[in-house]
Picture 1: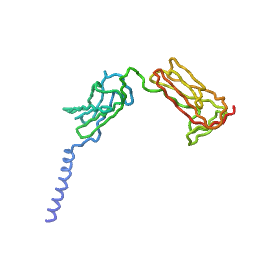
Picture 2 (picture 1 turned 30 degrees about the vertical axis):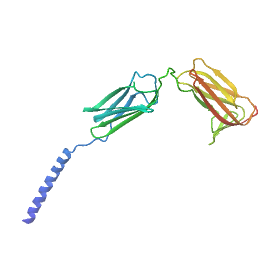
Picture 3 (picture 1 turned 180 degrees about the horizontal axis):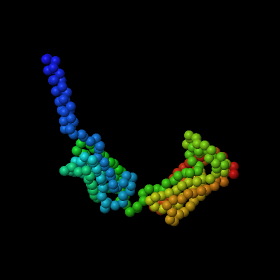
Picture 4 (picture 1 turned 180 degrees about the vertical axis):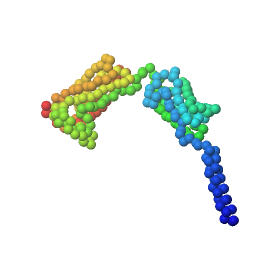
Length: 249
């Protein structure tokens, strides 16, 4: 009789345990680990801004619900901060703040968002504000194509690459370079060998060009090839390339 009572108790316990377990699972709320998505829409990272008449624009998104958003921006010696509580929480929020307080120079932006589950989302950007009347602050870009640093050429043919900080050239060769300016137009390009000008080109309405020059000078030993480019706003750039050259032609 005693064993029968124990068996009945065990059956009752086995019957009750799954039910209590299921109830516990249903009453548990799951927290999201996904942070809010923050996107700085304007200005874009790395851009140049010429006017304060537009806004810093940020988009905040979260799958559970945004509770707070914040925005900070500033430059050298100043910082502007803004934050707001969102009640009731929402899944998408747009924030626009005036840029009237920014000053000339590089400006950093940090945008943050907080959701109901305590997750934090962040986006950052850096742009340049130019308050002068000159719309171009950047010089042209110069890229040596032939010869290139660390490369070995024989009679204008590429042979191989070395881990050295110069170019090796044997025989007659061609100098080829790409010049460009995205902000304005090129004004002049000059090519020098050992500080002696050997080629120059002036431009009226061109933002980029390839320059070619066949080297027919007698050159033996170490020499310096230099390119100087000037744009229409008088911004200048210079690139130098050291070469070991043996050219009798």
